Image 1 (tube, rainbow, N blue to C red):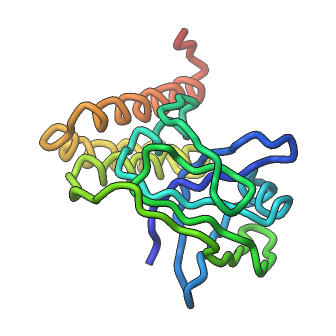
Image 2: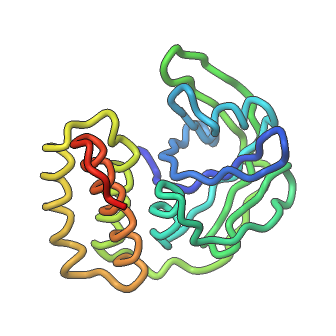
Length: 191
C-alpha cells in the first residue's frame, strides 16, 4: 500500500526541500523510492534524514509541485530537518539501508520520533481528486496529454461536487500547470 505524504529533507546548505511523496511501510520501516535524479534522494543520502508529514491540506501537495508555498515549517525534534507546522502528524526518519537502482532506488528509514498534532476529520472526494491531479502534474513529462486530459475531466466531477476553498485553490494551481505545459508543447506563450 502506498500512502500519499509530504516529505521534507534538507540540502547541503541547510535549506528545506518539500515535496509530495508516496511512501510504503514495511516491517515498521518507511520506504521512500525517488526517481533519479531527485533532490529528495540527494538530500536523504547526504544527511541520512527525512521527515514524513501527514496532512489533509491538499494545497501543500499542489503548492510544492507548482512553486506556490502554502505552508510554514518548524524544526524537527530529533533529526536535522523540518516538519510542516500545520500537519496532522509527522514522523522523523533516519536512513538505515539503501537498495540502489539505476532508475528508482529504495531508501529504508526507521522512525526515530513521531508526533500527533491534530485530529483527522475525514476525507472529502475533492481532496482525493487534488492528490490524483498532483500525481498527474508530477508526471507531465512522462504521460501523454490525452491521458492527462481524460483523467482531469473525471477528477473535475469530484471537485465540482465536494471541494471547499482549499481544494479549489489547489485545483486551480494544478490545472494552470497543465495548461502551461500544454502551451509549451504547442509553442504558445501564456504570459
